[in-house]
Amino acid sequence: MVVATCVDEQPSARTVLLKNVSNEGFTFFTNYNSRKGSELSRNRRVALLFGWYPLHRQVRAEGAAELVPRAESEAYFATRPRDSQLGAWASEQSSTVASLDELTHAYAAAERRFRGAVVPCPEDWGGYRVVPTMIEFWQGQPSRMHDRLLYRRAGLDWTRTRLAP
Image 1 (cartoon, rainbow, N blue to C red):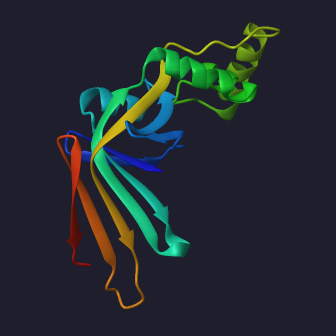
Image 2: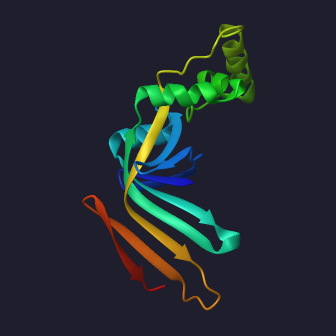
């Protein structure tokens, strides 16, 4: 899914791996010190986009991102491939690096550090859950008379509105 943040009137969008959808919201994981983590610490409001372009469909959602409980982040981290776990320790995500060699050396250092041991979840790594306040389903039509259904949270319920294309 694409996650869009906005800080200081500058929007920023990137693709992340959606790991869970539940009644609570949409969950993804990242380094808290990454650009998106930094932006989310300043403004929790986000927009999400799921595009299935060959099917002429998309889903948009807007809401607020909240940290998932630490235990949930640690449980998910433990299921990740070891290479991904080591990468989380080796990469200061979104920071400037001098060269690819610098990253390669950092990864090798993480391999040495955790050789023969379980790789723990870094303190600066974990999940966000986007709690939606709006979800729009869009179905494209050849006539451009697209079908758009907008759902807005109203307390514990949702209201549905059909939008013109």
